[in-house]
Every structure is written in C-alpha cells, then in structure tokens.
Image: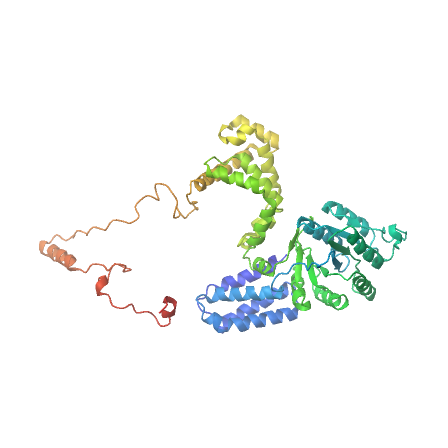
Length: 527
C-alpha cells in the first residue's frame, strides 16, 4: 500500500547521501520533498505540517551538524518521527481481571468488521483464549450468516440468537431487531459458558449518522466493553480522518484496527488516525485469509515505509510456520555432513508456504523496494510448479539427483506438466544450493559472486600467501659503470620504511614524533 510513499522517500534520501555536509538549503529541499511525498500519500495536512516542522527543526540542530554522517542522521530523524505519527510504542489488548473480556467492534459498513472479528478470534484462540463471537449486526442482509461462516472457519463458536433483519423471533426470546439485547445476552452467555473473551460485531452505515452513533453508544453502555476497536478501511482516503474523529466523539473507542492494508491505494490517511485521535493502532489486516492478521508495531511499519524491512515480523511468522522438530532434524543432518536432498528441499518449501505469500515475505526484507518491479512480477505459481516437479520424482531420485538421466527427465516433465527445460533449470539451481549447503556444513564461509572468498572460508586460496614477499631491488638499466655505482650507493643509503607507514616512507618507529591530528578529532580517539 505504501509503495509510492516508500519510493519517494527513498529517492529523496538517495540524493541526500551524496552530500558530505548538509546546508540549510539542502535540508529545506529535503523537507520539501518529504512534504510532497506525504501529501501525495494522502496523509492529513495538519499531520504533515507538524511532521515536517519537527523534522526540519531537528535537522537544523546540532544532532545533525555534529554527526559523522549527516544524511544518515536525517534518515534516523524521519524514522523516529514516523514512529511517533503511527502511535509511538505498540500496545496489545487490555484484558479484564475478571473474565470475560468484552471487545466491541465499531466502524462504517464495508470496513471489514465481520471478517476482522473472525481474524481476531482466530488470533486469540491461537494464544490460548476461548473467544465467543456475538452477531449484533442485525441490519445488513446476511451479516449474521457471514459471521457464522467466518466463525466456523476460525473454529470459534458464534452466538446468533437472531437471524438478522428478517423480523422473526430467535432463541432466548430476543427480538430480531434489538442489537443491544443481543449484545447483552451474548456477554451473559459467554460468562455462563466460561468463555474468557467476547467479540461483538456491530452494525455500520455507509456514512456517519446519529442513528449509527446512538446504537453503538447503547451497545457500549449495555456491555461495558474493555476494548472498543474502531475498524477503518485503509483505502478510503481523507474521509478516514473525519470518520475517526466522529467515532472518537460518539463512541470513544480505545484502539484502531486497519483493514485492507494489502490494497494498492495510497493509504496515508489511515496513518494519520493515530495522531489525530490520540488512540493507538492495535492490529492490521493484511489480506483476505483469516491468518492475514498481525499486531501493529509503529517502529516496524516505519521501517517498511523507509525500505528498511521488517525482519522481526518475518522471524515471528517463521517461528509460527516452521516445525521445531523438523528444523532440529535438518540441523543434525547438516552437522553430520549429510547432503541436502530434494526431499529436504520439498519439506523446507512447504514450511515456507505455510508462512503465506512469498511476495509478502520478500517485501519484509531490507532494500526490496529497489527490486519492486521484479517482486511484483514474481509468480506465486512457480512454487507450485517446483513442488509438482519434485513430487514427480521417485524417492531414489530425490535422494540422489545425479541418477536423473534424459529419459527420467522426460518422465518427470510429463508427470508434472512442465517442459524438460524447466526440470533442467530446477536441477541446476538445486546443485548450486546443495554446494552452498556443503560449504556451510563444513564451517566455511559463503562465496559471494564478484567478491572472491570471504574471511574464514576454507580452501587452497584461503591458505595461500597472506603477505606478498618483499620486492627485490630493481637493477639499474644504465650502461655507465660510474652511474650504476652511484645509483646503488643511493639505494643503500635510503631510509627504511617505518613500521605502519602508509606509503612505505617515514622515520623508524623509535624516531617518530607525536601524531598530529586535525582539530576536533581527538575526542573520537579518547584524548
């Protein structure tokens, strides 16, 4: 979503890094570009004005002028101010001391409240909680049915005594058109069934009106929720700020949830909500699947926007997806010196698929903004093709790919629905990966293309000469005996190079005077 903003900021900082010192005009030009980037991203104007003012003030201060790398210091300032805009420190849910914890969802129609209720319930269930979904949206057609489907997919029970806006009497004698009574009965049911979390899905409107706010306020007063989460569509533009202010005044929500964060809209207005309302962003919905849901960390989101990656989130997702026992088996196999096989590769690839979209994972790596076009063109189906090729092999072929001859390649290609060329490409790539894994298992370093052997890497080249032999004195080319004798005498009387001298000239170590340093450099040497 923030690709355009990220590209604009990266371009601005790239121009900044070419300057050794920053003048006031350089800082003004940088702040001007940042202001344009934020406005183009649909960030609220008051937030942009406050943000750029703070960045300019700090950039002109001594923390930048006295820095060893002023450009990096400006990037650090922008990162810190972005974190402040996004809410500062991350915050989790506040659970009640005496269960159940009541969580009420509020927002406009179409913001994704019902789907997000299922995502939140699944997330809490994976943490060991026993949530209950309450269908209090009785106005939108099929809203109750949708919540039941979502709850079934999440493995969470749904309390739905009323079928919705059909006007019939449901169980427990609750009126079909009374969402306040449904919400109140849902909390009592959760307490009786010993559910420790209740998630109430409420109705929305196409726009903010008095009836919507009154109904939300009545449900709040009837259930006394511990958390009121305002669900906002990250793609609605500047209306996000006005809507958030209206709900803050009418319902007084305690936290924000960003939905549809995987869209291609500019999305900057959603980033303004935390600063405008003073309420933190707690969660973000990043896809259509129930598992595309994560806690919102302002520092990590700022790093993504500045193309610094989000390695911590990537690690957390890997810990959820990867099997610890299988990882230990693989580590033991590598330590014993056994070869990495195609069967192992298939297991690793399946675990990576459990983490979700490959594009999403690659996008969390630092610097991937420079490869955005290649990342967008990445075909997720390529993983399926690779898996089909490996599954078309026999167990013996997976263990020892060297036995795959021409006829076997043709059979594998036909069985997996690909060409022989694609089979050959996979085997070639796997041979390179296998070679790298062998080097790692032996404790050697990895050879990077164009960089030669890195320190610590074994092999003949690493054991070669570490210091060139002293250069022998050059013979004189002069044919005159007297001139040749004079050159040899001058060479013998020449001073020897001092130890540690940079260019082979200087006094011996015991004759060197104190080192003269440029003014101001002594403080970095502890003098």
